[in-house]
Length: 189
Picture: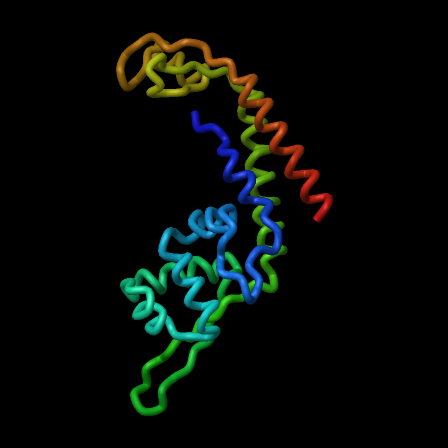
């Protein structure tokens, strides 16, 4: 079973972190960006901050990254409300140029929405944990519900070892604590 990562819950309730004059120095902010767009996103964001509105080609050239990869990252930032673009067509060649810029005005609302989604996921996970009995492989291969384990005659489908009952009380407690922290944070934001 995957444990709830403490870093993820911390990343979820970031406050307005990227101001117009600050390069990303906060580790939590970096982790958030890495989570949504990967390692190269930090360099791309720094380029956007330094240059303001710029093309994806210029960014690719300056960060020494493949143009297609830069575009993928820019669209991930766009999907998360951290960047925006405009299109223009060159009259002579007919080529379309995309110009990108950071849009940090709505970062608070983006993060609040992420918190709400995460809260819903945690509540579903809590219900699942509370309504099931689990069995695990002693070597850590599988974690199955009672029904799944009984179909396998309580033997690990990967290694064949006898599965043992898994007490998920600690997991449930951790999920409940994270839910309460998120609810409190949402009420105060």
